[in-house]
Amino acid sequence: MATPTTKTLDDLFLDTLKDIYFAEKQILKALPKMARAAQSEEGKAGFLKHRDETQSQIERLEQVFELLGKPARGKTCEAIQGIIAEGEEIMEEFKGSPALDAGLISSAQAVEHYEIARYGTLIAWANQLGLKDAVPLLQANLAEEVATDKKLTQLAQASANAKGKKAA
Image 1 (cartoon, rainbow, N blue to C red):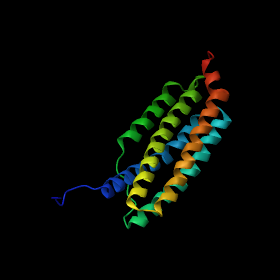
Image 2: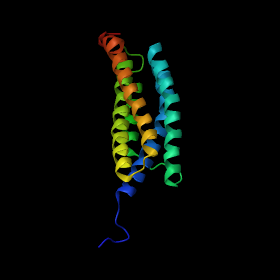
Image 3: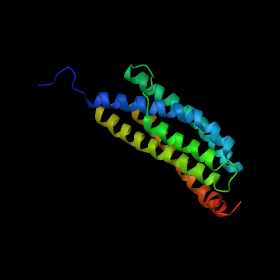
Image 4: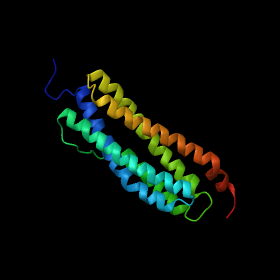
């Protein structure tokens, strides 16, 4: 017999949606700092481009909240706060060093991988729950995160990792 406090997949979906919404808003704040810290022009441009994408991702998430008839509200996500804090630590500890950009890219990829995991789960649950209008919005966000992760890998392999090996 279900009690009124029984949590369902609907509850879990909403909870996770609030989590990624909070995460995207935190990422939106962190990206300009990362762009300023990046030494390469490609790195700076990449972080700024992703800031614009993140704004669009937030808007899509707001549309999902709307589909659910719920207010767009974040829920503190300690995971993303920890990943961002690690990135800030790298910016501080490696400032001016040849390894800075490689460190920034690794931090950005940790963020991307977290987001990719969250969006993949939300898409599966949206399908399970019959939220067919939410699926393409979540898939658009996932596709951008995957593309950004690939660009970060290319940037690391093309220059940042090799530059990071050199002594200052």
